Amino acid sequence: MNCSICLNIYTDPVMLRCGHNFCRVCIDRVLDTQDQSGVYLCPECRKRFTQRPALMKDIALRKIMEKFLFTQPTQTEPGIFCTYCVDSPVPAVISCLHCEASLCDKHLRVHSKSPEHVLSETGTSLENRKCSVHKKILEYYCIEDTACICVYCSAGEHREHRVERLDEASEKKKEKLRNVLQKLITKREETEERVQSLEERRRKAQEKSSGEAERVTALFLDMRRWLDDLEKRVLSEISRQEKESLSLSALIHQLEIKKDELSRKMRHIEELCNMTDPLTVLQEPDTGDLCDPEEGGGDEDTGGHKTHDVDDLDVTVISDTFCTLCDIISGIRVYEEGPADILLDVNTAQNNLLISDDLKTATKTEEKQNRPKTAERFLYYQVMSKNRFSSGQHYWDVGISSSRYWRVGMCYPSIDRRGDQSLIGDNNKSWGLRRRRSRGNNYLVIHDNKQIQLPHNISSDRFRICLDYEAGQLSFYELCDPIRHLHTFTATFTEPLHAVLWVREGSIKISEGGRKWTQPS
Image 1 (cartoon, helix red, strand yellow):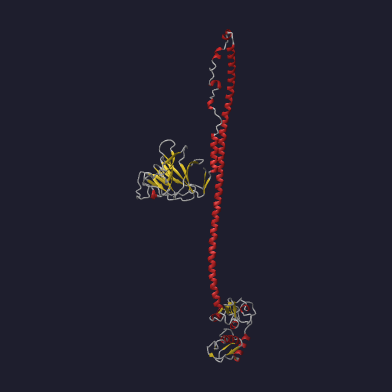
Image 2 (image 1 turned 180 degrees about the horizontal axis):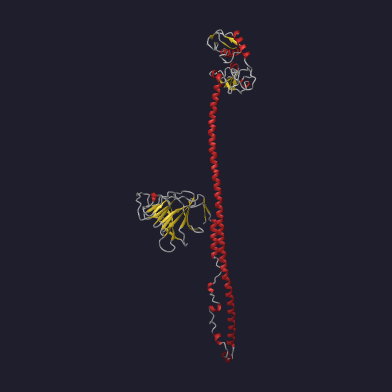
């Protein structure tokens, strides 16, 4: 009782001359599609007809179907029912648009094998799946007009257009959509990476801003401290010299009294000298005092003050103080790159220098290290850093231990490694700070074998070396409180610079530079 085309219960069954029955609507649709070829085939046995076969009513089958349909129960209960399982609802139902029937899993098998049976979810409105002109199921897709059409549309206004079945067109579109989806996924991943990169940049910018704020705050605190110290020093010097000026006033007063006394004696002597009576002159009782005006006129008469010890207000100290202040304000330099992480290069270390595992300390030892002799190794007690600086501003600190005979500084990589002038500062390819073993203040800066004696009394064993490559400045500082500038070399650097140590005794350790630093002149 099922049509082999729609697999549904016969509706208005008709019969071909070969004896096979079909729904009238189903066989008409098949024959319509065969009109263009002029060859007609039975969908069941594939019998060929040269002319469109006439459709004969199968009265017996029609009566059977009418009786069958009349005895079927009606669907009065709510829910979705399979067209063939009309007695009870089923949980999973698919609609066959071609057959205009609802199918359960059991009856779906046959329909799903035929491409003519377009399947859809039961909730899909059937009217939306029909041609608005011919009221037939939309089975094809016109590529040129990008429209879904029925079988009559394909034979009519879309006759010469490129037409595909809906499932084929749908798969092609799905493939395009998958490609678009993949591109969108890639773009989304790129966007996510960009967002993460920007978030990282924002985090770093915030950290840098916070660090800069702390640095500026510390800078101005240092400047206020320096200003307070300078103010106290200047006021103290002025107060000291003011006290000296008060003692000057007392001395002046005493000298004025002495002057008046001397004037009185001078007048009395003049009077005696002008007398004509010799008896009166000889009878003067204080003749001895008058005749010896120098007696008692020394330091005792002026209260022990020495006039040559009292000078005018000394402005030299004050001028020097203000010069120092100007240097502090005008010479501020911020080292943006921060402390350089200096690591010593063992391949350049002389064989009597022991290099620590962290590559931070060089120690003079009597035991040779048996390193291979290479062209880059120093013959004397020196070692260079792995790091090289060809731009920017950098600084690094050193601590001296148990040594009164050392040199620290920077050099070009082309420095001589074996000659007599290979030591730091004994050539035009290195700049250094050195200490000699002799007693007293024996700190010097040296370049191109020219030494400059430092006037400062250095007591610290920690020093800072600062490089401003573009400005051509290499500066040395004593790490005391406050930090004290020792000397600045000015040059036009033509090669990258390496840190370099010369350790004749004891050890030199490269210490952490700490936070970013603002260099005072």
